Length: 436
Image 1 (cartoon, rainbow, N blue to C red):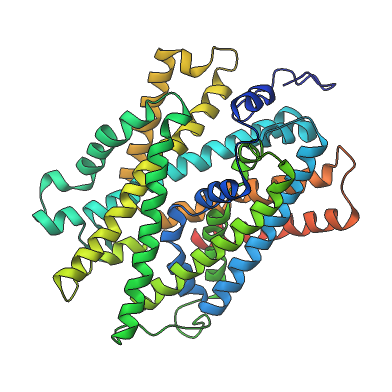
Image 2: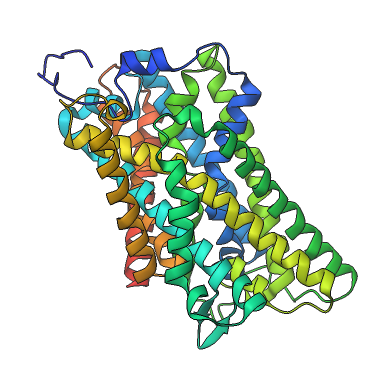
């Protein structure tokens, strides 16, 4: 990053400095459809596991309305970031914050990205553990695939199984020094996610045809189960599902026409709304009020036939493998951010094998330990959506508009930025207080 009048020449960009990002990105090779594919992949991850639980709390109609509202706000804040990227010299999210708020703004983005990515990695391990080893919730034991096949053994407990997956599946992938080396595993992971969504929807439709679906509520059940404050706890989960702001600049830098990014974002948001509402609607239809915060736990229920059990296990295993293959991609950016923050003046991480090895092993060990100690996905998504993801998705873009270092903000932009920030802060505070 070039030296500015504020003397911020020592700032390290979020994932790479502006020049290296431009050199690494094959500008002109990515099409709008490719950008849409990457954005959708960023949004549609582990978040779909908790979508049916949010629909159960909100009801079908408010659930769709809240999803649509968050998507609209995400589109507005993305437009803020794109506008200031075109006006300034920075090509990274952290660079934009540095232009507006100096080193503190730059550091704030880096910390939020690191916390968010680490949280996602922990969530992935928790989901994998739920699928393979089961989970206990409300005094009820939900068996995992391995326990259904072999019974409850010491070797198929959560700690041992996740350790095996980490050492023999994830460790070889996270030791690949370049993102491009993960392209084949990423392609497989996307295919597996599509399989999960397709099979889940087909199961719900088949259950409806057989008359075995559960009763669904169109509105929240204030009379019996839901309070007004419970509704706010669902918003952070949805915000996490639509959060992709960190990947805006890397994807934009590869487009032949960066101006196409806004078009790609809107298409991606429309597709993601359709996916989220579909899995929320069909998941709620299939499991009703028994839906868990992680829908995969519900797939441990015994089916009426061997084919049904096979379908259930296929759904659970396909998504668990999907997350195992997404894990190294998220880990790559997390490791890069930590290295840039702690070792800004050291050589490139990929060229320093000892530093690369130590940092990789430490991150993997930390992720594994936390996933074993806190095995509940719902609280992670509520925490991330209430803090770091809200900052990256709403508060930071709004702050950039209000600061307006390039003089590009119109009056309605500043009004919208204020409203977005106020709503994000209030919603997060209520959600956190309710959870506590």
